[in-house]
Amino acid sequence: MGDIKALFEEAGFNLSPEQERDFSAYLEEIKKWNRVHNLTAVREDTEIVKRHFIDSLFLAKAFEEIGIDWRGKSIADVGSGAGFPGVPLKIYLRDVELYLIESSSKRCAFLENLKLKLSVSYEVLCERAENLKKNFDIVVARALGEFEKIAPMLESLSSRYIFVMKGREISDVWTEKLGYRAYRVNSPFYGESYILWKKKG
Image (spheres, rainbow, N blue to C red):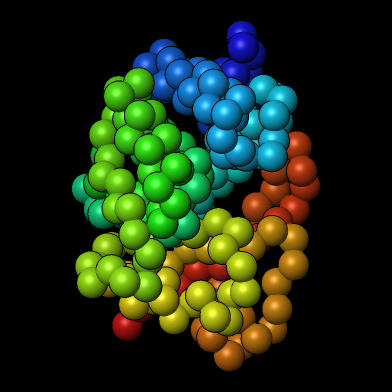
């Protein structure tokens, strides 16, 4: 796919040649594995780039605008699946220590294989997040299900911040009762959505 760089630029993200190579390799691996394993329902190249790669990077924009110093910090992507949002964040930010938490052995195998194709490294933790006894500076998640139920588990894994990509709908319960703030994303491709975030302590 020749226009990956242009799509990222349209969304406000400039890629180095190395980052462009990594995202191209990532795309090829997803397509290859999707022929046998259903990693993502999104099949078209441009949509994979927009919906999975670029969408994940709005977390990086949120870090910057909120004023979070992510450099050198540990980031855990809970329920990582095919690596979203963690792997795109690692490719783009570089200077983070990334952990991908995923309970499906099939998806863990994909993530381990993907690591061999990229110029970045990360650790795959192939187990259920609720069984982990570790702490990470920043915990991120995307499309994990009922927020009220997963929020305590995400918070138990985090020592500093929690970020959850929640799409277009947010509830007063999340902001007023659970204490999350809503960061608004404006995507040139899909319009407005929200990232819920919270600082611990």
